[in-house]
Image 1: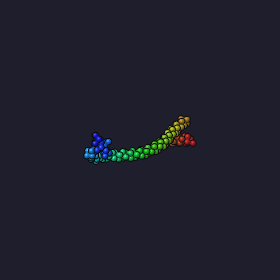
Image 2: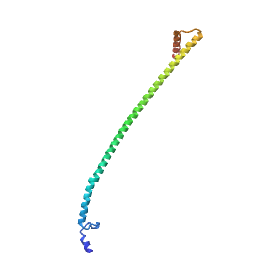
Image 3: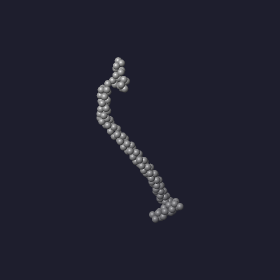
Image 4: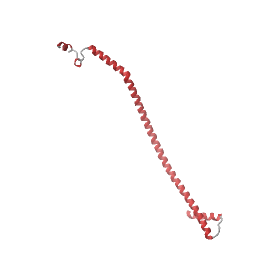
Length: 142
């Protein structure tokens, strides 16, 4: 037993269970070969897949940013269109109000002409009706 201990005193790897160099070297060579084979068979394809995934993610981020920019542009255009539509709506409502006022003035003028005809008791000609109608409308405008 002392002989075994004395023989392994020169071996710094003895505490780790390495009692002979031949199996150690064989295991070391097998380990190195396994690392090299795994590197080309497994690690490179995995790295390539991860690189492609990273590129896809970057492209997705760029597309998202572009979509956000386009969305902001569309929102701004929509807001401008809504403001413009509101202004046009106000203009249209003003035009509609003016048309209603003109129609009411026309009706008022006709009523005045009719009332004048009834009061005077004579039949008015078209020319007289138009003249009375214009006078009634002018009196409303002033």
